Length: 276
Ligand code: SF4
Image 1: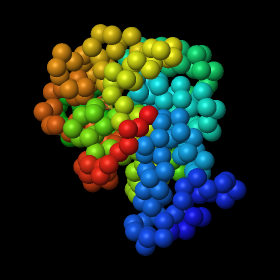
Image 2: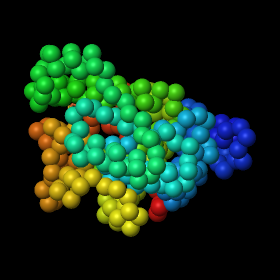
Image 3: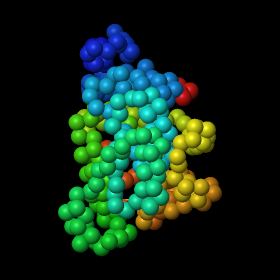
Image 4: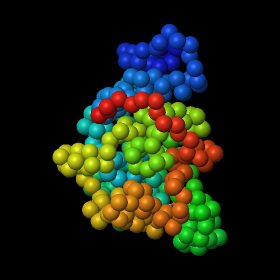
């Protein structure tokens, strides 16, 4: 494997290439190299290593959830050259908008918004009604496509690395998440620096470091998305049980973290280090 493939020009190589025959696409080999170099590192080292190995823009998409707030802390604390963006679906909780402003003030950063195309929203509401996403799974997915997936595509256009707040134990569907994954459809590498953190660990870190959090977390809202599609969970329920609760499928995702075929196709990682 070529070292040039793994490390950008002008940077000392932190990722070493083995003499074994290269397998996979260049993107897959870069993701594999990142996993080998930083999969067992702590979160700060994972982010710094990825930033040093990037071939272009790094984009972090935050929805101001617990994990995203902790990642914002790490990114700002290290002064990493990461664009922090958010998708405002126009159906968010007022608490999310309040936290958005609080986060910008706390960290001294501007978070770039991406909004849905107004003509697409007008078309959806005209066909299905204001809350038409309740009427069928197809309508719900169409709404998510318009309000989330399409804006995400614009947010990530031209990016080399996409940083997310996924954790492996958030749901069975996310159990196979790896630190670095090749997203061939988007032509980038997706990073999940908190993949092996538990919710308790993430919450403890946030509180110990004064990270601003959504007050809805204290009211049982664990995974927070759009207001009409999120409810508090009951004790013992899975973390994502409050998302699209009227749908029974185990793999409840909005389309941001699924493949181009619409399926979650991750395999369990062969091994992960103790991590951060
Ligand atoms: S979560 Fe609900 S309101 Fe938000 S984009 Fe998806 S279907 Fe639409």
